[in-house]
Image (cartoon, rainbow over all chains, first blue to last red; front, side, top):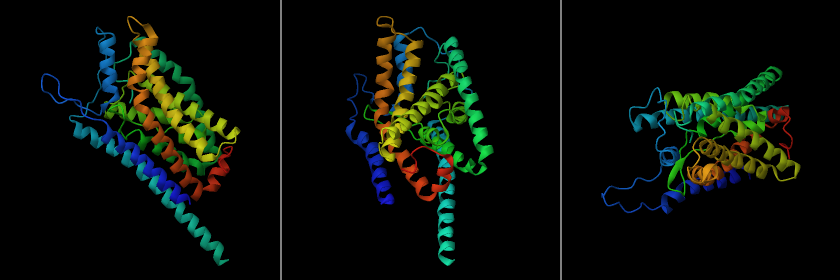
Length: 109
Length: 222
């Protein structure tokens, strides 16, 4: 029951990720013939919005380290996710085993 | 998605930083007390931090044609209290600001305030409220995590609108514009975050009823 519920919920999350990819259409290229990029970060859009609202604003700080390319950036994001997922996996694994051992011990006594 | 480095005026950057301090201090105190009283809860605290690590690294596409990421702070707030995620959020946001050029040191205060303070407090309140109204456990968790996520980005929009009011329409017009960028994009992601938080809670409750009981979370056993 629990496992099935979780499976259904997980499928819903997958659907929520896949749907935008299917539904959002790439706008036709502008007069300069350049392809319009989609699925950029919301923070980039916010940056644009700031420069549209107050064109004179100059950011007064820059990131200390910028990943040299988007590939390196995604490496670091993957690393972040892997560290987190690894820990959660270890924790759940150890608890499943503990619950199983406890059940077996209870069954033997 | 956090406010980018340098994209808040100095006064705002400092103001948000100062506003965070009492919450972070309270959060550190809460965590210290909990770990001292029940050292075995340390692992569960690790799971809460790890969950935020994973979710805030996942940039997902949204129906608005842009990408953003969930926050993962609802879980820890429900488990350890409304301010517990504040210090943990600082760690996550520092990691992203220093290594990933995502967010920034000058905007750290504002980003901590939205993601690690407003979001978790909202999630905690909504979870408590849901249980008080006798909503099922899963529904309460879902509402708490998803609305906490959404409110994080509403806060981000408010912060930017306060810093950059529209020359014609003022704060309100500017807020609508930033909400269009952040909050609208976030809606499907907030739903995903709600669902993922229910999934992890189901797993925790199944294998770990005792530790959750010890945390004495109202309504977790319901």
